[in-house]
Amino acid sequence: MTDMSVGRQSAKTKPGAPRPRSQLADFAAQFAESRAAVIGLVVLAVMVLAAIFAPLIAPQDPYDLASLSILDARLPPGTESMNGYVFWLGTDGLGRDLFSAILYGLRISLAVGVMSAVFALIIGTSLGLTGAYFGRRLDAVIMRLVDLQMSFPPILVALILLAVLGRGVEKTMIALIVVQWAYYARTVRATALAERSKEYMDAARCLRLGHIQILTRHLLPNCLPPLMVVLTVQMAHAVTLEATLSFLGVGLPETQPSLGLLIANGFRYLINGTYWISIFPGIALLVVILSINLVGDQLRDMLNPRLNR
Image 1: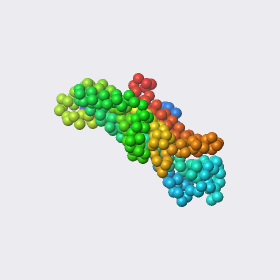
Image 2: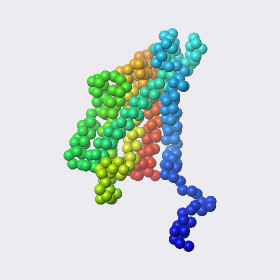
Image 3: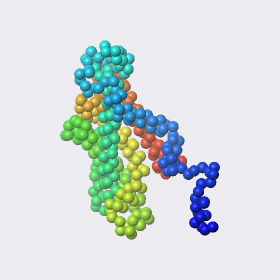
Image 4: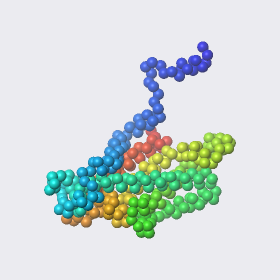
């Protein structure tokens, strides 16, 4: 019997022996070790699906002025309207069903937070990789911009930008991208500096591969684990920052209510005891941020060799 046939027989799985699991299965099993992370992922998935299918789930369109009635304004939770509909979470000052307004607010808050974090990831990763790979003056210029960006509080930079640009979804996303890209750039640069001196990078240079091919196919994949952790943290930070800007009245306009704007609309009624207008959107915002942070903490423990058990 040849060595090749012996190798084939040894490669076959013996009857009754456990089959080797794929990397995805190992990753899922390791992630499932944390019950808090699993619960956070499930809750986050439910809220994302509820936001996506809000037009099908919400009993009322909060943007349709014809469906609103001033007689339904500030009704407490569980109140039945004149049409026979029960407002389980009450209504706000405009007579909008608060449950429907929260679902639509989730769509805007999650969309602005996720999209701004993704675009900031692309910009920061590109600059960080380029600076670490080419080094010298280009790296010095990029890192001085990062230091300048991170020397100011993010909320202050966002307030100044929105004061110049004005209110709106696109303008709020631009402000969030500007205050986030530096975190990704610094993270990916630190990882790329440690990777560029390894043997596989020297082999890629010896093969005379192009710079873009080395950056995208060799250097970038080895920088993804810490970037995924930063991405989850920055998503929660972006949602929080957008809610803060909307609460202060400089973020999204009244016609596009996010969770922060819903909280601001009910803040004026807290003195009168109308607590539900601010409390329920605040709980929804808290659940979203907590779920993202739980998932991010578990990813950090899994992808960081020093914290991996």
